[in-house]
Length: 306
Image (cartoon, rainbow, N blue to C red; front, side, top):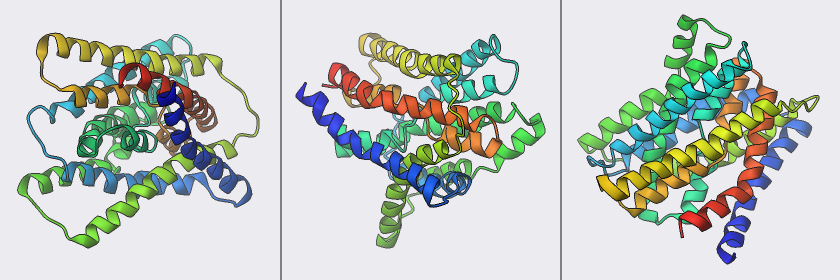
């Protein structure tokens, strides 16, 4: 119980940031479209470039984002099929997109800094890259296909700078490029902006809601994907590896489990906004998952990471 309450208190500032985002949008005239563009096109590429650039790449570690990417894609396609049983419009596309995604960055990274040893934070970012690559490849393609042609969806996919930031990060890491202290200071500022803007984006997404209509099927299926299917697959993977494969260690198990219990991605709101595909419905669902995570994450951490 002390561990549960301690983590619960540490998570509260993230929720205050969501509230500030709502206030900024409601009373200060801040536009969610502008913040979404800044997060997707400017801040995220810098943060994940640095995560890749500063991580020691080994044969075992390089498999981690690949495994996470594969799980994201499997869950996305699974819930696209399930969503097709209920909807024939772009709702099924957004369900599939957010089901395979997760708030591993804005929410997960601060939680990782609270829970994990400093020496594996870079590895957490590197592993979370799997979700980000999914989000910016199959995920955004599926989401865009709800309202756009295949050609237009591919154009939107390759216009996202995160893909190129990942490539450059790998190259700089492998050839041993070194940057000075100014770079470290700039990246530190971007990390702070990444968490603050990302969490505020959830609050900003709520300001456009004129009438709160809860799509319980959409919410239920999203929660099923994020809070049941994700942990089930990850725990199955951990059990398989710890029993038979012996590829990873306990630190990596902790990273994988943490990634499986984060709430739905705030970037779901950003992409739904940019693609004009049910942004209000997605914002409500992401908010509810984030509120649920306030208690769910401390519970799961108490059960599995201590």
